[in-house]
Image 1 (tube, one colour):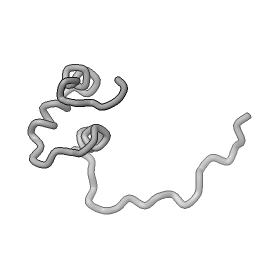
Image 2 (image 1 turned 60 degrees about the vertical axis):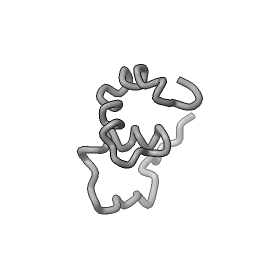
Image 3 (image 1 turned 90 degrees about the vertical axis):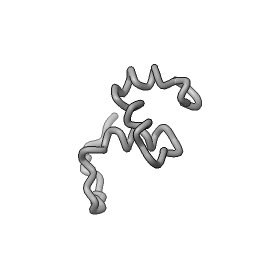
Length: 65
């Protein structure tokens, strides 16, 4: 899919993310973007209230050529 995703695209969206349309319709406060919707849908069971610290250094030491 390209461009804006709207309710017209819900059939295709539900194929890619089964259950996301029902999740969207049950939300009291709707997300502003599709990315926010996908994030909320995929993280609904594992969100922790604390902020997750970000790694201070990249763990990759090898150079790819």
